Image (cartoon, rainbow, N blue to C red; front, side, top):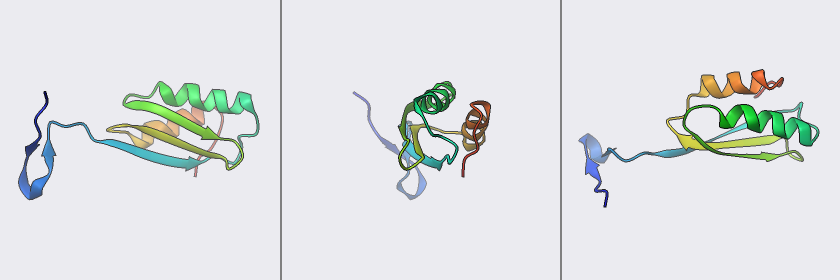
Length: 83
């Protein structure tokens, strides 16, 4: 059993905080695009899940202690730009 510990101003200590970051990737048009972006993003430390919607061109990344610079670099590595 994990117990919450509270620090100054009531913030929790020792409990991972999950966050979600969403990007628009206009260049995604097909299943291959989706797979390429997903593959690069899931390899980034802290990423727990990646949801891709080709219709809206949105990618949502959920995880702990996400590094936005690393996420954007992964998207570039897949061959796309994020906004």
